[in-house]
Structures are given as structure tokens and as C-alpha cells.
Length: 185
Image (cartoon, rainbow, N blue to C red; front, side):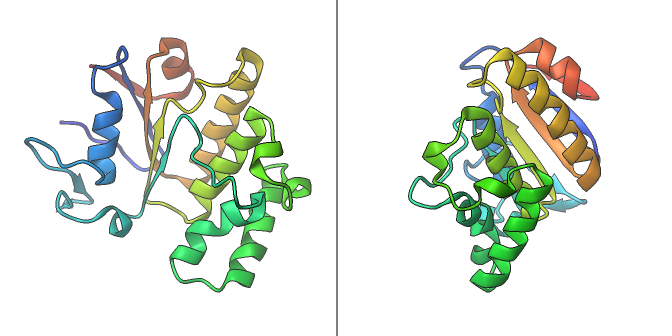
């Protein structure tokens, strides 16, 4: 059993191939569990489709849309939820400003550095105000300096939004720096 409280970051550690990413996919609803159940707020959500869970999953490769500019990448989730595109873009610009990325709103994501892309991915994940944030090796593609900077930024944003967060990593230092608790697979 694993319980993650609002505002808490719980790390799942283990070597490659140990099932860390599969666990996140089951929580997100992308992969059905072979056994057991997924609960949120006391409700069994195992059969609930991913789009109804209200969870945000950030992959290690950022999963940004290369054909969209930064602003539209961040606004994407709001548009998918039915918000008018103009309002979604305005909220995206506001969010990008809070992430120090306002000047990049009209750039293509492929023109950004790895750290900038990671900030865009986090802004996109948080703008929809997810109930749970699922992070799959979010800093593995970054250099050490950028990794340290973004760890701190992520912790600040997660606390600010008071959301339950499950962090999957093979990096014990990363787990110790970010999480309140950790588990080994």
C-alpha cells in the first residue's frame, strides 16, 4: 500500500526495469494493474479512464508538442478541458511569466534548452491544477547544475499548489533532495 498526502512528494526508487514507470502508468490509468486497485480520496478509480482522473504525468522526455509554440503547449490541457483558446492562451502566458518563461511564449519548443523545455512541461502540467502530479525521471536528461536548480523549483511549485506528487527516479540523491518519503522497488 502506498498513500500520498496533498502537498507531499513520495519517491519511488529502483534500477531501470524494476517497474517504476509502470507503477506511474497504472496510477495515471494508462496501464491496468494485474492486481490490486488505485484509490483517490477513498474512491476506487482503477477503472476510471485517464482523462477523468485529473492527474498530470510528466515524462522524462518532456513529451512537448514540437508543432506547437510554447504558449500553445502550456495551454493545451486547458483547451482539451473545453476552455476557449484565447482564454487558455492568456492563462498560459500568465503561467509562463511566473516560471520566468514569458519571453519564450511564441517560440517553438525545439528552440529551447533542456531546462527551458522542462519548465514548459511543468507549467503545462500545473496549469490544469491536477489533483496528483506524477513525475517519471523528470531530470534525467539535464546537466547537474540545471538538475539542482529545477529540483528546487519543482519543490516550490508543488508546495505552492499543495498537490500530492509521486516521483519515480533511480537517483537516490534526487529522492532525498525532493521527497518527504521514499520506497525502493
